[in-house]
Image 1: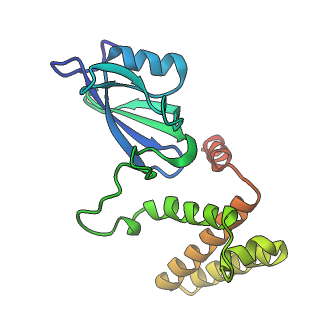
Image 2: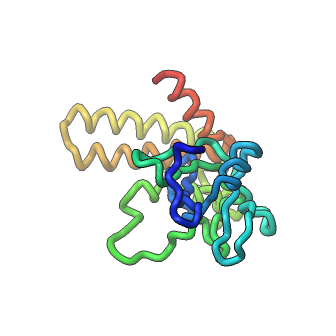
Length: 200
């Protein structure tokens, strides 16, 4: 690990991201021992500056983080760890991410909306709501599939019409309906990523 640049306390910051959405889940610190543990076990380990001890994320809550990849930045002084977050909860407050407080702007106008949309769709599956359009799609597979075909056709027509606002609208519809189908069929988006990686 001589390639990493640790600070004067022997620590390096670690940014943890959801492997599917790219959502930043948390930031913690690691020393050489924590990094070695991560590579050995495949789960995130950090150094607690307050307790002065090594700890495994989720060791008490059960919300462990299975590592998909570890990368270093250009200066080798920060690590980026992409994980599968058990139970979808990274923060000790019970929130999906530690970064749930908005200081400026609207994070829902970023790729974070995909993560939020997936959570809402999943919630509709496990906690059905009367009158919910998503629940209606879950209960009518034919309608669900027809909507994907319909939205794909409308997306193509918007492209042909060179109408950028309409293209964005129809692509949003196509993404939503595709995510509903993926949730209904328990499709692991990691498999989709693997297929994209193969084709790259």
